[in-house]
Image 1 (cartoon, rainbow, N blue to C red):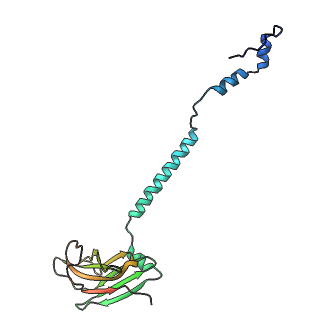
Image 2: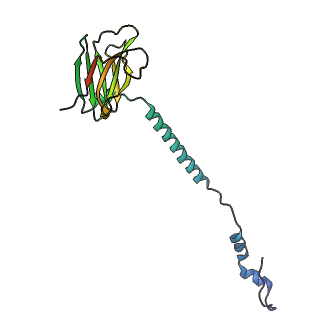
Length: 186
């Protein structure tokens, strides 16, 4: 849209106005027109790549967190591993190895007599603050020297071994056949 001069100048040539305008009408029109900016394809691709990388990193973190720890290997390889051994009166030796560095430990039974049919040796960690027992995995009866690991050493004062019926027990149903105090490095 062209503006009209305030006064009527008869001497002016309308073509001269167009020549001196130098296309400013077009500039005015472009400046007042609202345009929707489209994302640049490169920006969109970069955002997609970042989102995909975050998703992959999250999935990997979850997978690593869900992978079982090799607690026995971690404790064995720790620089501060401390081991205590207790003899079982019916034959065999129970060894408790712990590492403050790994905040974990494991119990190994060597040369224990086979439990009666339908029974298993069960390890329990005893909480240092409450004295409550928490079950560990039952020892495998067919393993030569069965081993059971545990985490959270800071809260454990000892490990008790009982003989329990096969299946999961929430609390010990028999008196411990062995109590293994957590060894210290002193």
